[in-house]
Length: 91
Image (tube, rainbow, N blue to C red; front, side):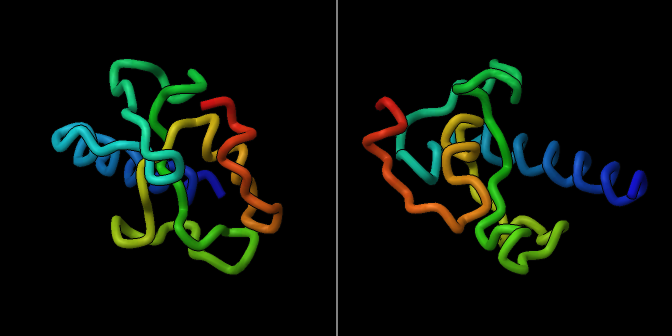
């Protein structure tokens, strides 16, 4: 697990930098992402799996399997089995 976790952190860091360079917005809500914030901040960047791991997506999908998201939007989306309600996310 440790090796896979390290590979995920490396992939996510490379993806974050690629998104930062083009100032990519959150794919879930469409709002800008502040790339100076930590990923632990609600409005910070996270790498969102397009196909969630919980529904069979790959842990290490590559850039094609990821999209930029705010931490709060990614957390609200969850594992993809809950209904999505962007209005409830507080934008």
